[in-house]
Length: 391
Image 1: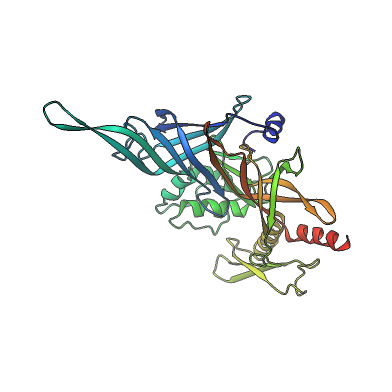
Image 2 (image 1 turned 135 degrees about the horizontal axis):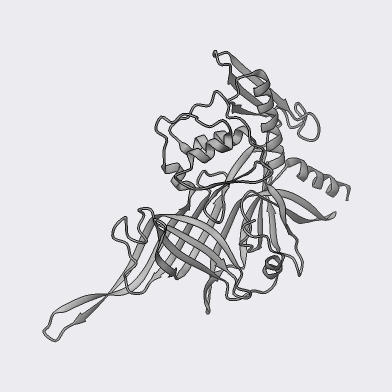
């Protein structure tokens, strides 16, 4: 959660008015455009992308001064960042939505023509808008490729901090257990790939924190932090499910090699339940290239990979709920699903999230509804299915 506040939770579940988005532009740590008037906008996050957060924000440009001509202009794509904050219209509560790197500004300008007394015509700026496509700070990590880098730190977290020290701070959730950098790890050109390899070795993933830091969190997620129930006082609007066997596995195969080049293979299986290896579901392994250099290492990698896959979830549910600006990807939530056997809880990890604006006579405000993608385990869905079948 970006902010843990029971008062905010209660406010979100009730009637709101006057909520707004506050946007400032910074360049090299200095404010270069303050209180940009955000018109239509959308903010989206996807945990399956390296650049998880992507935004489109249209800001007003009443006198034409904000339309960029060069990379170094305040809203130009030469390194300017947007600081975005959700502000409650009722309580004034502020929820930071992070820092966003401007990637593609698209100015829309209008011009007014005046005829002077001597017959000459002049054109003056009539105002307009700038539609900005922006990415979270992970875009900078992706852009900053490695140049013959080698591992210099002893542990994975320390090495991630070193790789990102000139880009963004790094914070670590207390549930994450650091570990040694695998001896066989060799970097390519991608800094983001290197970060992901290091975090994979300790069973962790990343997300961008509200203050612009890269936050290291457990692969299984954080929480649960929020319960989504329906009803008059609830926040759940709709729950859709579309079942597929795509991306569902009942085994993990991890391959590596010894320091002298001999191949190593480790395997782990689901042995019981509806997805049992060799049962009706079949034999569906997930393959992974490990950086381990011992048999015990690839065995452990396979076990960890399969356990994380099961814990973090394998089936995606599309959830429409009331907008909670404090929620983040990698947060775990409990969705209360209505079934013929009654209301049953489903716990899963938020892997997708989309917030948008809504336009009314009063102007543009955050929409009351947002869309989540919640990844739940196949076993959890099977437990619900069993309850429904029993009635």
